[in-house]
Image (tube, rainbow, N blue to C red):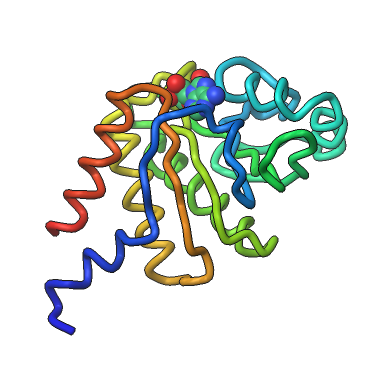
Length: 182
Ligand code: ADP
């Protein structure tokens, strides 16, 4: 296979869609949680509302989660089998290890998915809401981290970036296109 084909292969397991992540019947959806894991605003609130009160009960037993780490629960009333809760960094200008922390969220979530036999996973745009991470930087980190992971571990067959607004979807599509042209 010519070397120039490889980037296209790398990006193959990724797709971008607009929508509400709580509606997806995948093996795992990722929650942009906070360190308490006890619920919050944005996508976190939506996931807890849709999953029902058993989710927060299980989360209580997890003793929180550090920034850049991830923990897994069942999905309860969600169509998704599992929720992977990850805690993104709050944007503070970019000099406080925010890029490394954000990449770690994606990597740790994917590792947990594989460890729990999940083959399809959906991510929201972690940290780009209440935590104010610039959407373009975040999209590039999300796409490149997932691509690197898929390159090394072919177990996961399908990664969906679920975007809540058209700008975020366009930025993820552009990041995937840029990766293919590398
Ligand atoms: P954070 O605190 O990590 O910034 P937010 O929940 O505030 O998390 O935002 C993360 C991203 O999730 C934002 O792009 C926001 O628009 C998006 N979002 C909010 N609700 C949903 C949902 N139901 N499905 C998918 N994405 C969502």
